[in-house]
Length: 136
Image 1: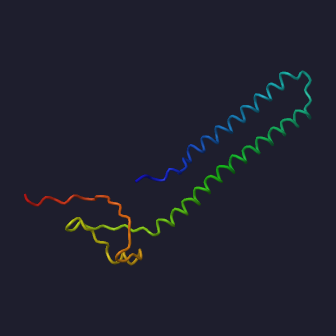
Image 2: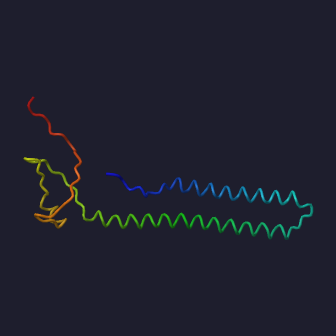
Image 3: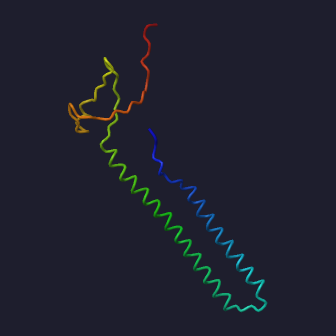
């Protein structure tokens, strides 16, 4: 049996988000420094407009990254909610192996799962304890 392979690694998502944000800041600083080196004549108003434009673009990218991360998280929560419906029809109980390898489902579990004689069920076996050898 395998687990859910669609789980998010929130630490990795945060690290990627920080990495993207750091790259954006780095690109902004490179562009700003390049602009300052190439312009002998400094126009503060034009520089402010360009910086504001770049900052708006980066804020938009930041908001998109956060939105994407929230969307992914919500989708996974929704998927988990859908999966929980499947677990509602499951039961777990302990029983012993009887003669000829038979097992019994206790009455309370049969009632809760609404299963009756002749119904087809799936059995997953997870050994818990070996029978102790009492010949000693």
